[in-house]
Length: 87
Image (tube, rainbow, N blue to C red; front, side, top):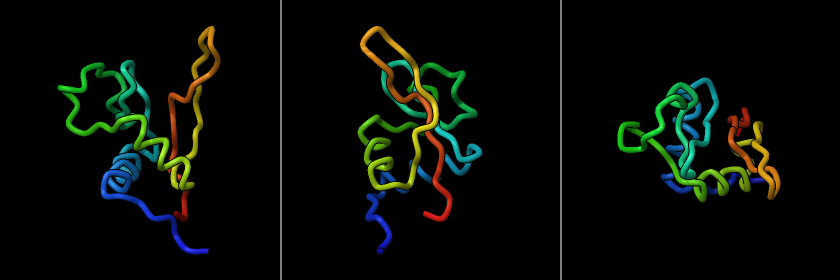
C-alpha cells in the first residue's frame, strides 16, 4: 500500500505535532496548536495553527489519530490528536 498523499498544509500540521511531543490540541474556536501552546487562547499570538478541516484530513489519511474528546450536550468531539508513527 502506498503512503497517503498529504498537502503541504497537512505535512506542516504533522511536523508541528512532532515538534510538540507528537500532539496537537484543539482550542476554542476550532483551531489546532501544538500541545505546548495549548494554554494560549489567541490564534493571533500562536505562531502556527491549523484549522479543523486540515486535522480531519490528516486523521482520514491515517497520519494523525484522535486521542482526546470533549463532551457536549450534542455529543463528543475531538480535542486532541497524536502522530501515528511510521507514517
